[in-house]
Length: 427
Ligand SMILES: *Cc1c(COP(=O)(O)O)cnc(C)c1O
Image 1 (cartoon, rainbow, N blue to C red):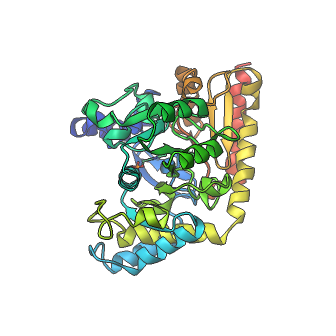
Image 2: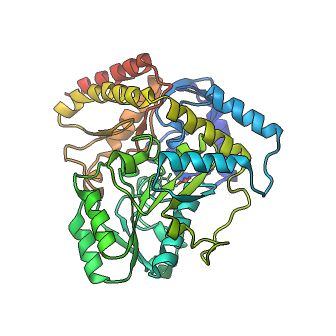
Image 3: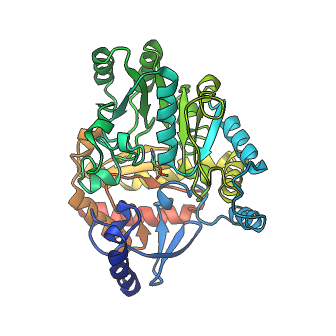
């Protein structure tokens, strides 16, 4: 595979940006080799600056559920640009998008648009604390909620792959109020509620964890979180930055039929442009300025370009329920291809809808500890094999394979064949 241009750019980038990238996982640290510099992407195909084309299963880490540069989305964005890029004043687009979000996620009675998932989580935690007048939050080992100070504790995603367990530069006092429980382990949550009685503002969870690889909630786990938070006058926050509009149109809240107090969105909600959103019960959201005394603001929040991409993306999803059925079908087809590896005891596959991960372990993966039994060297080998065969999957074990509406059955069959070949060899 020719990589001259990527190599050249990487060298230059390395001098300009830490690790040559603007977000760590892009640097290929956990798989080795030169990161691909992308020139363009359309549908399910991504092309690098050396002209190599791949079937893409990263999908910009989630937003591209319709595939890249969907015509309708590009048209909407182009049209919006002609009217101006940002005004710092209310627009109709914000109202339309907020209304659409609430229609699809009825527990978001009121919401705020921000510019990233990190910002949305940070703000949701602030309002949870303002509302409950309590300080502590519980998060789960291996769940990732963006890079705000208080949440960089036992976080997933690139934080694991780079083997930086916690971040330097975060004062101890910033994380003193962050308590950590084990995913799928309700006893660990009960213990914290017992130990910190009356002090816990909220439990924040990825309802399907997707930043330690895909880990499904065990039956009853999310329900138990709903009960314990209600009994303790704490809030339940679903971080649906990945699951929102993906595991179902109404996200995990709809899929698992649970009503959290607050939901956090990102990725798909911006249709490829930078947006985050958080919202929930009206009485909680009314705590936010200018109505209440919880402050949160943003110069580019709800900007007209990003909202036009979001509106178009969500409208397409809403008007085409077939998308979710087809995603499921394609996902199962791909999952099936891993079977030789599963039978050989080399991997375990977790899948829900268009999200799946193949962990290089023979342990059942149900939490952070079991995810970490994965052999990341073997993953790296698999990654490069796929790349050589024209398939771009996440350059790190602890991420998801993202399917999109743009993947054709033929794309999936081709990919499945490569996967099956690879794992048939390791018998
Ligand atoms: C990606 C992600 C975030 C952070 O969103 P950014 O837009 O990258 O700031 C938060 N939570 C989850 C579950 C995510 O996957």
